[in-house]
Image (cartoon, rainbow, N blue to C red; front, side, top):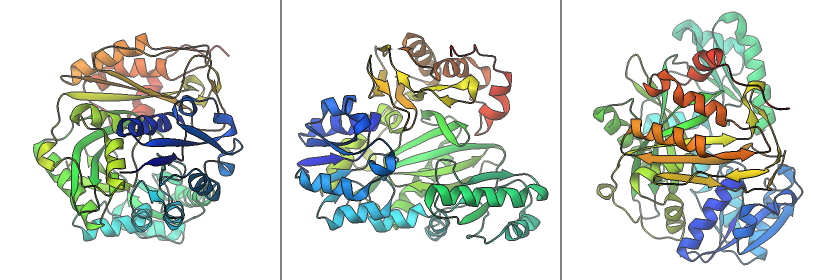
Length: 456
């Protein structure tokens, strides 16, 4: 078992990892920027080390500083959380070359699955269906040649991308050149790689993903699937488990495919295999694999009773998985909302500031993952998420009712948040009927929503 872990991240995931370490008797060292010295994570960790000033490139993305902090404090492992360096193969490689354990897959696997074009080829080799698409293309002319065969709409995507960056939806010939240049430029700025590929875009789609876990002994299991179809600009807003949009045959198909792919690449640790469901045809296609713990992992924990972060740490220490596939069952329904410090009426503009009040809801089947507290100053340098509200109930209808009540009970003052937006979503008939798709928020919900304006 690991003895001391450096947490190379911030916010709620840092708190989540600290609590998992505490449950296993593992000491924790938090790597924090100078802006994060007063976070809840800094209060809970056994030790906090400042790794740089607030800008992420000088702190949370500073690989040498993070590795030096881990070595200097006597850690034997580094947990990257999600975001920042979690899926950067050079960081995983630097950690292991320093004689430490990287809590995640090997650098080689991160490289393989982090390149979207390469991962498509690997999925195909593993027998997992992918959407019609290309390898990296050099120009808009090459994209146009693809559309001559497969038609519009198409999606231009950054090979090294994620989180919607370097991605453009194109509906006709005239828009292709500008969209291609824009996607390539954004990919270069975000990932240092302008490579673009193209896929046929599925207009009526659901986003379904499967949680997998592998160990160093060759074992791989899945913990069921999540439905992450409520999105805005390819960013997930609400996640549910299990999905109510697939039947037993489809569920078996995608969970088996996810395990097959993870086993094919020798996957170790927690990962997520993401799929797109074509609502009209019922076909399901591989989208990508995220080689880390996901923001939405709590909904899977709520329906399976698992502690996925503790299992990550367990596996990273060299132990075998604690559960066999037949030991993993799904019970009830769980929903997660991401609570962001943003003003939805102003294009979801980030809204940093001091929390004059922070009072999470409590009660049966309610969980809040957050690093916030009353008086906490939300800095302007990082992601705007201030917490995650998760509920669990016997079925989807009961879970929606519980979430709606929990959102009413949640008290956050001092900043604008997405809570009013989320309340409206949970009141919407389409959402309640599960009649949504990945573009539903932008194309259907937001045009008819009439919220109150923010206070400043």
